[in-house]
Length: 211
Image 1: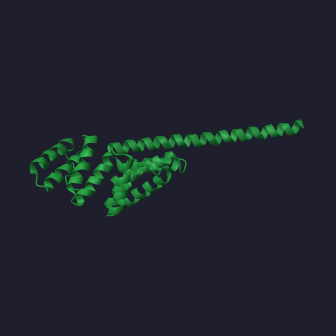
Image 2: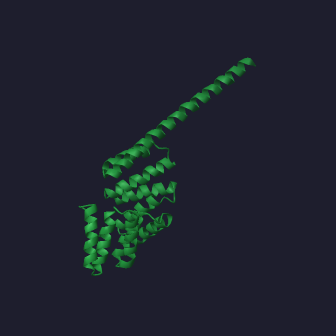
Image 3: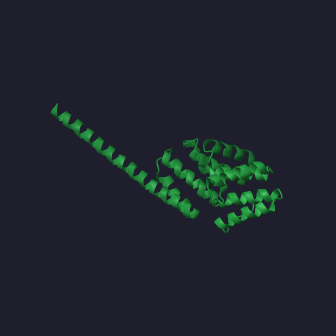
């Protein structure tokens, strides 16, 4: 009886030890994944999208599958790939992120922007409108909806979206560039020039053409 008890205790102790090792291994991978994700986010902020993609890919490999950590890394890699002009890849990452967190407004926004770039206007509009519904003050969602409206010649609506974007971020040069185009399209050259000047002061190399 005593021998059996010792065996049971030994087995139980081994199981606990193995569980602890596995637990620490998972925790270690999670910490590494979060560090890589942070590096990727910092790279996006500095405009180094190739570096961001690399670091976020590392984070995705290390994060537990279908975890919130994985969803966040996928979302940010979608942003990096969008800015690298890899719109299909950006959509794939956003899709994967949204399967984990269906109401992620940033993933919806960049999927919508990528769909717009690929000419899939109806799908883009649906994603961007949902993103704005989830986060009405989203600068990027407002900007891309403004771009869609401008493309359609709906200048009053474009004005409203661009104005909201620049209200929420008064350093958002692309939004002021959009307002400049809207006024120019309606023949108000003075206002167009004023908004162009603001855009250029914020970001001298801002693209003044419609995306």
